[in-house]
Length: 270
Image (cartoon, rainbow, N blue to C red; front, side, top):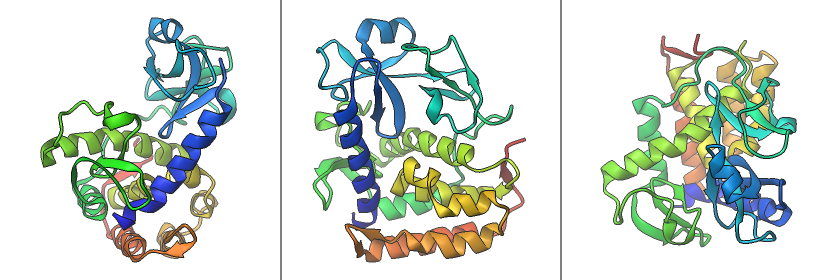
């Protein structure tokens, strides 16, 4: 699973940082999903979901709280809401933890096309039961990074079938679909193949790296999407400072998909 190493490294680093900084009413991160450290009663009482192990410096009844909100929104600290569209009164915790809404009234896609799924599955490989990847991080299914001991957050029994693994992947991809959609300006039109290629890339490297990337910056400046993808995606071919053949192949496949013509526009969605 060499192709999966880069994303695992970045997600593990992000998890380490979020744990170290966790404090009551402070920021925490579950995978790529933003949250706030709250008492379990405060979280669940407001419709949130609690996650153990992300606020270790706090009492045992304080856990990382995440919540979806509004129309396609996510609860997060206002300072990290890149769309600038927030709605109060929908999220638990401090007043600065608000509902971050999509940049337009358009609904964010919830899935990618079949060509994208084929690319991701072939790149990640199938693992039926939790097992360490080459850098020691437990994964299962098609590239799902375990968030808890034994991957207890996975709602399917092990060993996974290709069917349940596909369902898990579809659920995992929603985070990356959302971040790619929100990070790219509504002035940038992308078809389903272009968008899917970027979601595959995001799933591999993490939403934080997508948001700060030159690729996204160049797209938002109005440069040719095909030129940007051809020049920028291949640069993401290293893990631990070394070029990995699996990542070289994955980036090439993403560029190929990105440049495959399609009349189906998914960004912006309306």
